[in-house]
Image 1 (cartoon, rainbow, N blue to C red):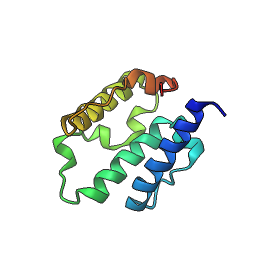
Image 2 (spheres, rainbow, N blue to C red):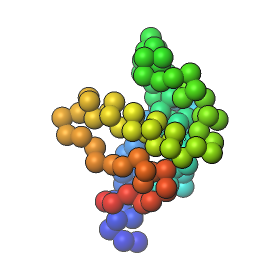
Image 3 (cartoon, helix red, strand yellow):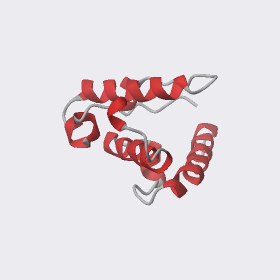
Image 4 (cartoon, rainbow, N blue to C red):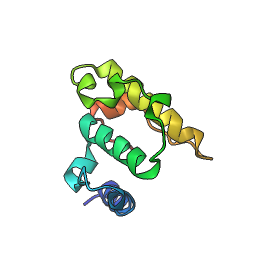
Length: 113
């Protein structure tokens, strides 16, 4: 196992230990966490919002269409725009922004360690 694989496995274990207690579904399985499909990410995002901000009006951040993962089924650009919105939202709450590109996530390109 390479050092990148070890680091990724460690990051997945940490994320799972923090996130999974917040919700029942989706189950954060390692094989899905390594290269998560868009639907899986969408489900995780809304599960986190639901479990942490019961009074958070999703309509402030998302359109009605974005609330339905089926909207994105065959629309790569819509997926990228949705993830850009999530990344901007997360970065607004952090001192150090995360460095990730939504187009790489949608393309399934492995993130650099």
